[in-house]
Structure formats: C-alpha cells, structure tokens
Image 1 (cartoon, rainbow, N blue to C red):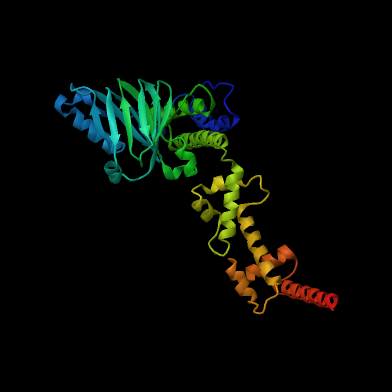
Image 2 (cartoon, one colour):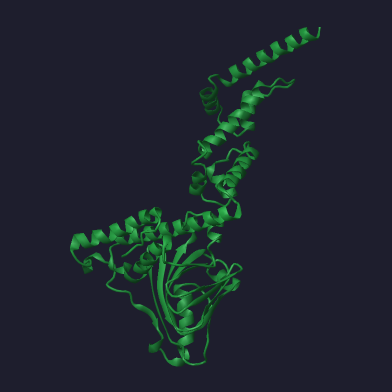
Length: 373
C-alpha cells in the first residue's frame, strides 16, 4: 500500500493498527492464513441476477438489498432485464458489501426508515461508474475513486446513471464517538482520495470489504477499529476546517459549555456526560475541547460549585441557611464529601469559613460606624 508523503501524521498513526494486523498474519504463517484460522474461506454472492429468471430479478434484488443492507425502493433506468451482483457480509459490528449493477435509482423514505430505524452511517468507495447522492439538502457526485457518505436514518436518493460497482461499509452510529454536528458536516458529501486521511481510508475500506473474511477474529477486529478511527479522524478534520471557516471556533464552544455549567450547578447530576449530551457532542470531544483550558470539565464543575458555596457562606444575612443546605443548593449531595473538598480548596472547613466571614463582616461594619460617627 502506498501512502503519499503529504498525508497527515494523525492518519498514518491510525493506519498503524491496520498494518500491524496484516503483518501478524503474514509473519506468523509466511502466507495467507490457513483455513483453520479463518471464519470462512470466501464470501459468497448474496445475489447473482444472472441465475434468476428475468421476470423475478428486480423483485429478488429489491428483497436482497432490504434484507442485507436497508429497505429502499429500487428503480431501474431501463425496462429490460435487470443485472446485478450483491456480495455482503458481517465483520464485527459492521456490514460490508460490494454492489455491481446496471443503471438505477434508489430512494429511501421515512416509511423505509420506520422498518429499520437503527442509525447507520454508510461509507462508500466508488470503484467504477458514478453515484449521485442527494441528502440533507446537498447533491454531490462521487466519481471513480471517490468516497461518499450518507446516513440511513434520514431520507436519501442515489442515482447510478450507468453500470457501476462500489464498496459500502455500514457503521452503527453508536460506534462513532463523534459530535452530531461534526457528522452532519459530512452527511451527503464526497471525499477525493488523492491525499490526506481519505487516501489512507480508501485502501483500508477496500481491504475490509474484499478480504477481511480471510483473517482471524483478532485480525478482523484490528481492521474494524482501524477503519472506524480513520473515518472519525477524517470527519473531525473536515469539521474543524469548516468550523474555523465559519467562525465557529473551539473557543465559542468552550464558552457555551462554561455558561451551561454555571446555569446548572444546582443539579446533582451535572457531569461531563450530561454536559456533552446537552451540546450533542461526545464526551471524548468535550474533553478535547478543554485540553488547553488547564482544567478538566469535572474539576471545573466542582470548582464553580465550591466558589458559589464559599460566597454564600461568607455572606451576612438575617436568615443563614445551614452548611448542608448551602451545599445541596449547589449540587453537593454528600455533606462529608462537601466538607472534604471544601477544606482541600480553601484550607478551612465550611463552618470555619463562615465564622471567618462573619467576623470580617462584623469588623468592617464597626469600622464603617466609627467613620460615620
């Protein structure tokens, strides 16, 4: 496999597990893995229309696509006999397939989605011909060698204007530790594969689809993880580029997160997980946002809560709530834990802090009275 020198270091790092997997198989055996080490010797076509009576081909193709991939409506360009070949398999959590067929159109509607609601992200590699993809208000054309991406949980339209072949991998959305807005940025788009992460992802995807069945479960796991990591890097790379171009910088997102934390300090279940959920981003991405902030999200939540408690405890008022009441108001549910972290931050117990604040306040009040007298 040749990778251009201009490919990003990050992509090459993610390629390492993939290369290692292939090396383990080759070094151990000196050749392709023996039959005893593989799950099956070869993938069998799910459907070859040439072996089916002409009047049944389209219906058989339609049923096979719905069963092995996702339900859709298939509309051939011509009224003649439909010719196609569909090869598919499961590789870990992924569905992989190679599709070769005459020109046709595919439409996936809300009714289709209701029959197979699991969110899947499709990553395709155009081998021959073209694919015109329409989804999320975008229309793009994948030419030979390009990658294309679509989301099966949303309606889409695919136009194959001539005979074509393509490899497609369906990735469960839950396997992608990506913020929704980052994934939204690549749905209904294409990637050229001349350079960058896409140049690394394409051969990995092609190998996974066409050859993964030859490797052991251990080796296949490495391929799956490598593909998911590479795709995630590709998505993040484009998302961060678009965000910078649109002025939606990381600083703006961090500021929104900080404001959200301040507004929800009194909620006991406030946590990095709830913050990420509220902003529709992954926990890992949230932590990445705060890498340059000098504090983790969990520590920030605790610090802001302690600051609010310290301010309230030091404030003089006619009705002073108990220390436990103050702690609970700002999200601390365990009094012992609150006292421990408060002392760690301020060097005094909450009661000592309150007493010191009241003493300081009384001294200041007396001084003001003397100055006024």
